[in-house]
Image (cartoon, rainbow, N blue to C red; front, side):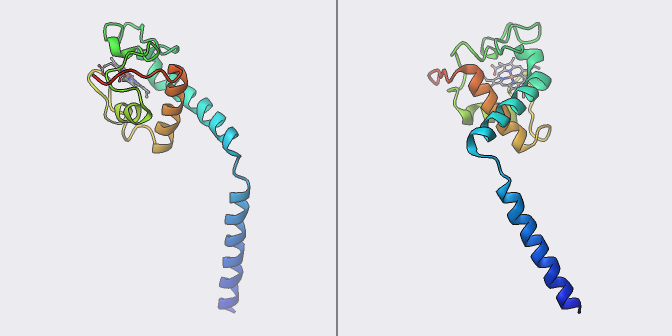
Length: 125
Ligand code: HEC
């Protein structure tokens, strides 16, 4: 009897897993979702320094040239990896967001920052 219950439980969980996988959004929608989520995170966590437009013209960050994320001038190379690294580790005076944002949130923020910058990359200096 116990065995049968376990079997039923197993089948039900397997069906649940399959059901969830089927409900995954197609790639395009997922990216749109990331952008929207990334924008919300940016406005909550980053805009006070980088401004909602990403130009960095704020009291806090205005005197740091690299706080402007949309002028194509980078301290790093402006790649997704470099942006992710900056978010995780921070760089004085920017705080580290490792542990404050989940990996998923960091990924979504990178998607949004890349969109803000319009893919403008600068040379590594
Ligand atoms: C306390 C203010 C502050 C906050 C909050 C902040 N930043 Fe920054 N950020 C800065 C400053 C100032 C710089 C430029 C400093 C430097 O030279 O690295 C910078 C640099 C960067 C860079 C590197 C630009 C380059 O040239 O390589 C990226 C990317 C970035 N920030 C993204 C973000 C994101 C995304 C968030 C939110 C999760 C965020 N920042 C939150 C102040 C801040």
